[in-house]
Structures are given as structure tokens and as C-alpha cells.
Image (tube, rainbow, N blue to C red; front, top):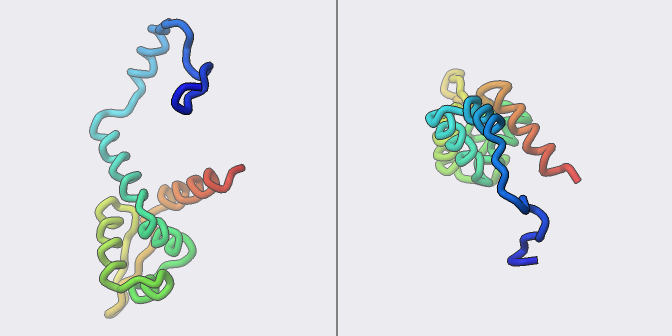
Length: 122
């Protein structure tokens, strides 16, 4: 083993399958989609934001409730919610003087659910 790499985990000969390579290239995402998707994953790569997403996965909450649940200041929660809102991961609704947050749509719910299943998989 060299630098933590197993010896047989790469091709032993160079052989490019041109048809398959072209088919994959033709089906790959456009550059702007790659950038937007990377931005979503980057935003979700923060533990505080994952905790907010988890809390909102369980229940719609106002900023005060989120701060209490997570043991964070309202200011810190508001900052993280702004980042999540900018990527359309969360949405909010006003009810009188209260602002309630929820996950934006089923795509985000599924993304969280699938990510959680992946880390829990043995």
C-alpha cells in the first residue's frame, strides 16, 4: 500500500471507452447547474445549519423556538436562516408578529432524509 491507497484500486492499463465517455459527457450537468448544486451542498456542509434543517425536518418553528431548541442566540439562528433561505432550503411565513420557518419543499426533506440514511448505513 502506498500512501493509504490500495494497490488494485485503479486500472492497470489505459483504455478509454470513447462511446461511454461521450455518452456520459452528453448527459452531464451544465456548468451553472453544477455551481448551484455545489452551493447547496456547501451550505448544507455546516453543522449549525444541519441542526437547523434537522429541527425544521421535525417541525415548523419560529426563530425564538429554534434558538431555544439549538441553544443558539436568535442572532446566530437568524444569520444561518438567511444563508439557508438564500439557497431556497428554507421558507418562512409571517403570522402576526411571528415568523415561522419550515423546509422549503419535499426535495430538501428528501435530501436530508437520504443523507441521514447514508450516514446511518453500516
